[in-house]
Length: 630
Ligand code: ADP
Image 1: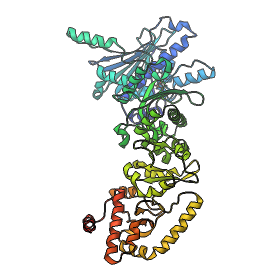
Image 2 (image 1 turned 90 degrees about the horizontal axis):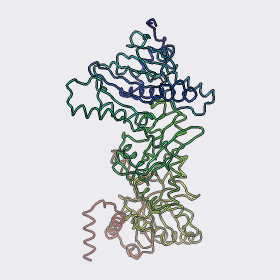
Image 3 (image 1 turned 90 degrees about the vertical axis):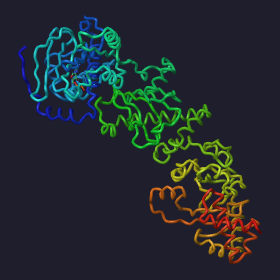
Image 4 (image 1 turned 120 degrees about the vertical axis):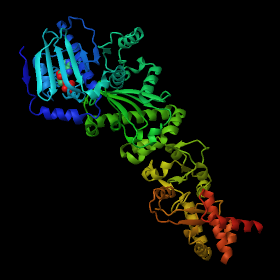
């Protein structure tokens, strides 16, 4: 053949520049691309040989070889796959986006080919990633079924040449003349790491050979080199593609550790797949414990994505809603293009479908666990409940299902125990319409809160919202099973049957009238601290408690905003007194300083009871001492 010099088709030079400089963020992925192409080429040869035995007369052992020559600064990636003839070389490597692989797929689809082999490339740009690390690339190839070898060569600047090649067996070898600052890729360690990282699950053995062995290589060095080179760099197992029954638990555990760098095995392993609208295989894991990164912004989180056995990334958040960010694992889809960028993933309809399917699978796994093994579910919830709950706030679509999965301690549960909302509803007192909760930083404080007294007296249980996220989630909870969530330490609450409520209301109004002068003086005495002093419906045994106005910001939110240096206006609370308490009966008769001191003490003790600091500790101590003297 006469040596021909060709120009890349018009737009290609620009495209190439784009590919080399911006499409891929990491140079190292050139190896992934070339190995994928080699694997594709073998896939195609294998597939075509099913019907054309002549293609495999040489009885090939399918393999991908990497050969490094430090002296010549070249890295060669060879396969014994389908190969190309001159026309295909021109077509495939001279025309971007006219990817042979893509055409092949289309052709097979048209033919309705059942056993469509999995082909990686769809876009026709992967090969050019080679120019990220090489200033010249030579391709020698022989198409299976022919005996003609061709050579393609380009240094990017002046197009490419196609000429006769010297290769004497079918397949393709791609030689990269590495740039001086990219010689790291000639090193066994580096290549071996990259293969493990990106191409471990390629189905053909990938081996490495060093071509320029020093003549005086020591016997020991020779031995260890030969040992290294005899073994494939990849393990060739795609666990997620194997049926669950064929995989041992230890294998899953090892894979999980490899994937997550967790020392411990997984808490739960969920292999599953989908067929139909989107096809993918997934292998999901719940870790045993939350990792630090879950609570740190900008840390890697998400699933590993493989497209047709090729690793795309291990922090693909788009595959999971953020409230499932504790889930680890792999998704392998044959419906996505190999060179998907993050931006593309974000809006990709297939990715959205995978995300929905993964979410549904995790939810149903949790629902199952809840039904079949509550103890195990509790263990899970202790580890990840806080993150799961976020979904109630951020994911309207799934909020109702998530509500059925969350658990809370209540005024009745023993310390450390929690119940589901449906259990709460089942045990509601007769006539109870709402679901009651109280917010506190610590469970012990919540259990002791005087605001629970009347609820308790009327046989109503109260959920204890003590997880830092609970307070802001309380807004999103809205309702469960048609029942509203009501904060017992806010606004007006009434417990018991309608009759009981009416009787209580009447008694309350009467007491308020009766105590009017006292309540007014008390309010005056405490005006620096509270917005009102009024008669309470929530107390049974305690003399008083502090409550918030209906729409007030929760105290924990105020503390958080202040910590972030935000200007939050002081919101005074309401002091509620128990008209039936002997202490109140006594204090109502006080006047002047005696009343003011007594009210200050009552207010301070209400603060102490809920675990809040008193405004003037010295004064509190003095008042208390005086009282004790009396
Ligand atoms: P893609 O692989 O995405 O299709 P590439 O730019 O990587 O795009 O490759 C372009 C085309 O060149 C491929 O579709 C394939 O037809 C051909 N090709 C690349 N590498 C090889 C190879 N090792 N053996 C046979 N054909 C190859």
